[in-house]
Length: 96
Image 1 (tube, rainbow, N blue to C red):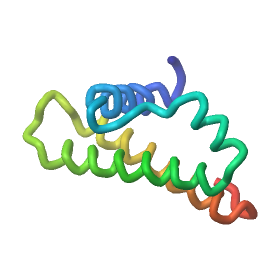
Image 2 (cartoon, helix red, strand yellow):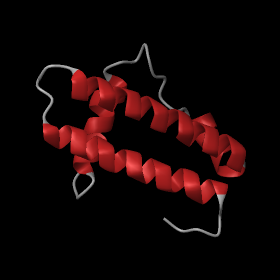
Image 3 (cartoon, rainbow, N blue to C red):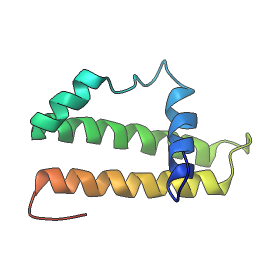
């Protein structure tokens, strides 16, 4: 993937896909349900945000294992975006 968000997606793949025992990727069925059910969408986004924040905390406190400050910044940017999406689901009148 190219573009300004490419690094965020690389962090997503590194963080989520490298620890499959901790995180199950979102299925197509879950995405379809999230499009139709705002409460489910909010739960899905909240779970993803909580998982991301826990992984970022772990990266922050782990001695440098090849993970740089750039990845932590990208993860923080993704966390902010998830938080904005959660707020939008909670209050549709707000726009991220």
